[in-house]
Image 1: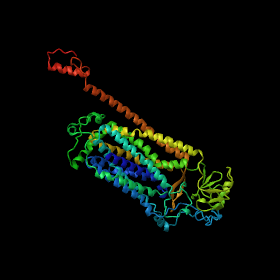
Image 2: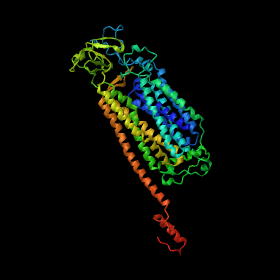
Image 3: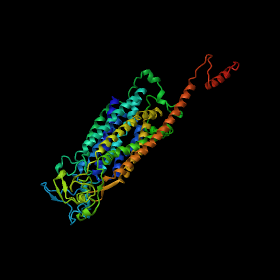
Image 4: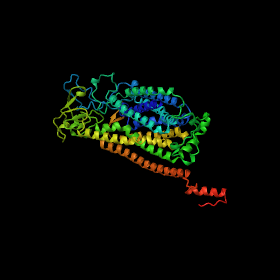
Amino acid sequence: MFLAAMCFVFFAKAFQGSYMKSSVTQIERRFDIPSSLIGFIDGSFEIGNLFVIAFVSYFGAKLHRPRLIGAGCLIMAMGSFITAAPHFFQGPYKYETTISYLSASNGTESILPCLANGSLAHDNEIPKVEIQAECEKAASSSLWLYVFLGNMLRGVGETPVMPLGLSYLDDFSREENTALYMALIQTLGILGPMFGFMLGSFCAKLYVDIGAVDLDTITINHKDTRWVGAWWLGFLLTGGVMLLAGIPFWFFPKSLPKQGETETDKKSNILEGDQDRFIPDNNKHSTAPNKPAPVSMAALAKDFLPSLKKLFSNTIYLLIVCTGFIQVSGFIGMITFMPKFMEQIYGQSASRQNTLISPCNMGCSCSVKHWDPICASNGLTYASPCLAGCQTSTGDGKDMAFHNCTCIGESPLPFANMSAVLGQCPRKSDCDYMFKFYMAVTVIGAFFSSCGATPGYIILLRSINPELKSLALGIYILIVRTLGGIPPPIYFGALIDRTCLKWGTKQCGGRGACRFYDSGAFRNSFLGLIYGLYSLSYVLWGVLYNRLSHREKKLALKNQLKAPEQDGNGVSSGNRNVSLAFVKCSENPDQETII
């Protein structure tokens, strides 16, 4: 039952975390913030972990572990609900556009912004000083702090799940079954991201204010970079799933009978075999009693620093930690901005975008701040109908078309007519093929990376003293998530921001979220950093393998010396026999001994 509960909670937390990753782009657009700030918000999960994980892992091992896990699940559910809260405090989403009030209500031909008097050039300029505060309040630009707080609470709640859950499972199961149980947990847990990203894809296609606005008046669709999906809806669902996942842990006892162990075994059993297979020599005399005597919190606190010192004197453990945080750095950076990467590289037009004032639109008084992309008949995307020199339009909403566009007629590219349609130009036909190839490579890479998860945890557990398992897992998660979880989204996001070609404009003025990136620079920067981090982690894995092999040979040689083979005369052979022969000579000096 505990194994089943652990599988469910691993699924729930992965479901919750992956949905957060899939909603990063929607949150960035809704609050008009750059990628570097959204990376900081995403890193708040690890910040929450950082606050409590060392203490929970150490003191939690002496307390009621299942109930601590149940409390963590409750906190994670609250974090999801708080993350979704800003949607209910904000007004309707207003995307930047110059088209909605220019289109004809009856669908007939109407005049567009290419006017000589420039009356529309200042529509999106910074408002006057006296209404600046009111504008900021209406835009609710600081409500992203609720998302930060909710994500941080999820990090606090997730703290006891892994170190206490896995140590509880390892303590009361057969040693040979631990790897199987961890594999089952990881297998069920890996389904979480699959459902999380599917939910994220579904919610991204629903308009953020669904049910509150008339969707027929919206001039953009889910492929537009100004579109914001119903990001808040998924957090309500993932919070409910996490709430259910925590219920069983409130009913488990503090300890369980050792799997397959009799009463006689409980009295005489001393942990040996694989459990201390990689334990350093200076820890070989330590033992782990089955039922530790109750001690005070002061005594536990006094023993905390010596336990840390003993833990960090283990070179195998240190190598595992260093390898882990470097590999996680690449993974976190990749998974945080993967949806944005796929959108920018495989979802937007490959053709260059025209955002300049050339002679064909000189008399139109266009503003380069406007972002109303249209796709011309020559396959070129223009940032707005004004920059394309369009004079008239027909249709309404998403079905608008633009005509008599002078810049299209003067373009050196071939064109069918001087018209354009609303939205960015579609990708070339080969992009679908390349996207499928990219996904296939990603799946294969994820498969091979996943193969090392369970063996890695087994090596970690078998390389330390039994009483330090929870602390070792907690410190491992603390370091990995501090160094590998908090900085990567920030510096990945800052690197991505440097490739932005067109920034959006906030409702109250100032730079908002990026609307369009340089695809080549985005790809090279994003993938180059990921490959660099993973390559370094592979080098460290090689060093760790070499260290483990060296220690295994030492232990094998030591076991041979402890179990010598006796010859026919009862005299041992080898190096061990030398010491035995000298012992015989000292006990009976008159006896002739051949060495």
